[in-house]
Length: 140
Image (cartoon, rainbow, N blue to C red):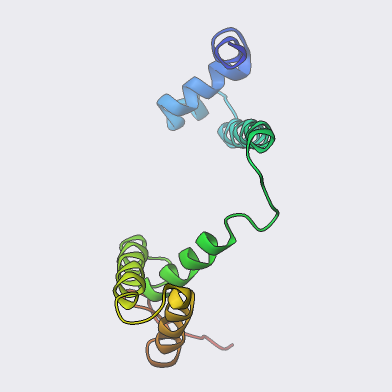
């Protein structure tokens, strides 16, 4: 109800709708689109934080919750190539395939080790990933 009222009856809500609809036209109309985007991001982050606090009352949470998923995501991005979204998707697919395929022959306790062995091999033999671009150094 509060978000609906904010979007419908306030100047910032009107500006948010204008920037969402057509950012160029909003700038021409005198709306600071960067400020509106920043406010929208901050508002969304605050609402996500409140939601996380409310969910934490219901389930047990720890500070390291989700760290494994984060690490596997980083490994997938490195395998696929930093800066390449299709590469990250391919890296995630190959990483999940290798981890789950490896469970057939070895214990499931070694899934994370499989992921980091694959990461090590990629860093040694193909440090830019599948679709990563080699960065050229320019000296002055």
